[in-house]
Amino acid sequence: MAIAIRKADEIAKLKKAGEIVGKTLQHLQSIIKPGMTLAQIDSIGETFIREHQAEPSFKGLYGFKGSVCTSLNQVCIHGIPDDTVVKEGDILGLDIGVKLDGYYGDAAITMPIGKISAEDQALIDCSKDALYHAISMIKAGMRFKELTKILEDFIVSRGFVPLREYCGHGIGTSPHDEPNIPNYLEGKPNQGPKIKNGMVFCIEPMVCKKSGKPVILEDHWSVVSEDGMHTSHYEHQVAVIDGRAIILTEA
Image 1: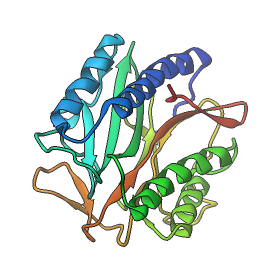
Image 2: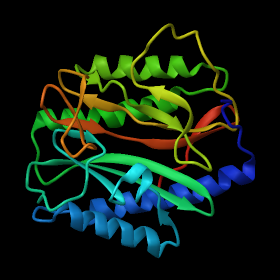
Image 3: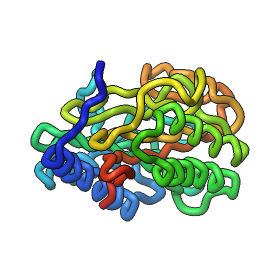
């Protein structure tokens, strides 16, 4: 399947969807505190999205029951919002998708709940810094595999490893589209499709402490590392304009 090239009016629509994602993440960060349940957090996120005339695109997607992926501590991605209570010292991943006027936005953060360990802070910093570093390096004409290598090299340089089997992705009028953008390189970086102006995609470093081998929990959604340790996840949606990547999912 060809990677879509978006026109300026389409990118503008994707930016509107993305801004709602960014605002929702910002809103949740400002109010989440110890004692709240993951289900409460999900409900607040869904309400905020709908108040901004958008739809929570994750709700019902592939059978997912929530509007916000709430990934707590060991869970890296796809955490299901339930009655689990967040407490001081936890780290919580929030992954949010919206649909607005037929176009999708998608982004994620991992946030501390109160005071966290220095090790967990370094883990969060790694995924966030890897994301922004990779975005700063994007230019039209480079290959997606070069971007993958940039992500992997950064994560490894911090002493962590990328989660395997999961990846960033294209996005537009569907929530997941071509290309797939892993955080680990398979093959050579000078292979595969090139990044072009008008392409829109999500980059999402998923970072583990010791092992990148994924394990899916009994809920059939939550993805953890086989090492059983804490993980971190950050994501932005970007558009390539005038040869550089512009973030679409900032508040």
